[in-house]
Length: 378
Image (cartoon, rainbow, N blue to C red; front, side):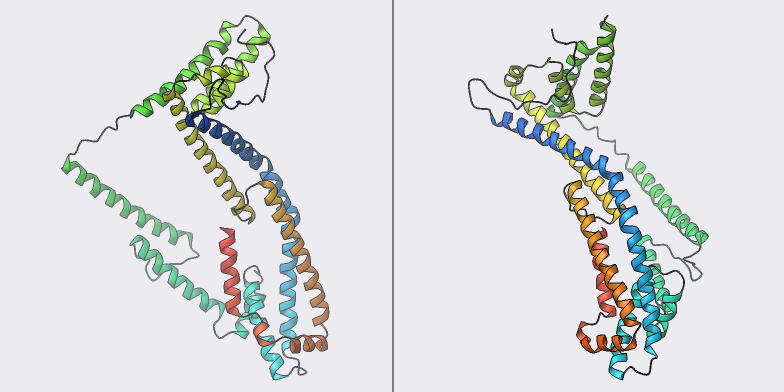
């Protein structure tokens, strides 16, 4: 019988084995592709299954402690600002403290919405936050005008949704005009569109996957089954076959053939060379698409959770999150100790004396840290 009453699941394609000679190059390639596809499918499934777990770990473990650290940094900034006016500090100590306050104020600007960091920043810098924002807006405005070729005007307001809407409308108008001009130009040329002819390989590939699908439908069509239990099993398998055919998923179709024992091992051994090559081309494209799906999933997780995208497996991503948690715990403990210590002016003076000027973080270092953060976030 070709179809058994009990359907085995998770049966995998065995590598092609020749009974009388060594496997050909095409057969070895088929083996490599099927094994690789199975690994990639399992990896993608694992990323999909662990996506929510990773998100939960970030939201429940990393974000809260990060917020605590941000609050402590702002508290440290306020404390050092108060200490700066203490007469017990020497000129040299105040110079060091001034540099550290500048750096810390720049850091706190990234998350503080209360205005405290901005107010302290402006007292320790020659240029205010408002002036920096104006310069950044002017530069961004010039880049937008350059990129889209549309003037924003002197009254453009970056905080206004209507200003952006007017700008986008002007950009769309320009695109539509350019498209209309191109269409008119094409009509004047009156060049008939070229019809791409399918290559022999494309025709063979299409025929091959259709042939595999037809073989399955002959065996699995539920209307030809009288037994109700088997009819239900065939309906489920037929749904899988339809889905695989719709996706051009050759591997899934071949696995179905093995699952119902319709496709014998020797049939693969004796498969015509041109058909085997067609199988290999389809499997190669399928594996490429699967790798792209994995890359997109990793990029999405990286964007959502600030996990570097170069980790290969979810286990690596969890390891990274656990390591980040340890680093954050140490940073929090150090901040707690520093806040307690620096509340005593004598301890602060001792710390400033122990610090060489070259060791103190600068505003330039803050910019480098932000740049590196952006790179890893991408």
